[in-house]
Length: 306
Image (cartoon, rainbow, N blue to C red; front, side, top):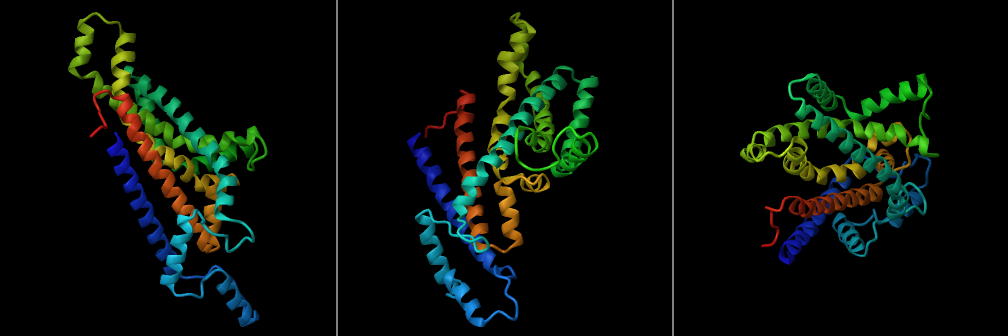
């Protein structure tokens, strides 16, 4: 177990190093500058701004300085908003993004799993076909399109919820619904397929021949083995919970880190883009690591040691 953790730790460090390096050089290769300076602005002001943020130095020197700052946990200060650090922006926006993201994952997992179980147990019935249609719609329609639709009808037409903002519990419902839409379809389709595969295995017929009732067979044998693919998908799903709802946050005007990322890209805010990208990569790597551990716990046949 110790060797496994050590190997994963080394791979995480290498991954983050590559992400930081690639992001740094790509950002400096993109056309445009973080400072919009008019022609009337004195050259001395322009030089002072570039000197303040180290942009007047050679690219290699900027890279070395940036990597040294990362090792100290310093992701830099925004080039667009005075006195606003990357870590400060993440600290303020992360809880908001977590509520929407993990709320969407939790709702999507519970509702999708329920639909998937019903579809598998009622295979080739009306319920099964309805779940298949839902899965097709969930894959075909992006969650931000669904978010725009529910925003129009639930907020504008029917006035059941606020149209946008982040001022109370009622403002959470529509963004979570939008974030959960794709997850519902994904989990329903995956669990249905997995259950149908498990239900055709020999040990299920053996359990039936022993006289076990339907509830025992479904609960102890079918569901436990059917949930393994869902556990595997939790890694990218949890990572996406914090980093995959950029457009939804923009549509509903939610002050999360997705909103910050979009604003920093629009403003060519180098430090903010690079810092958020590295933090997002770190979140993704941690989520994948935790899922590997959980996978070994769920399936007793899997042993991580060695």
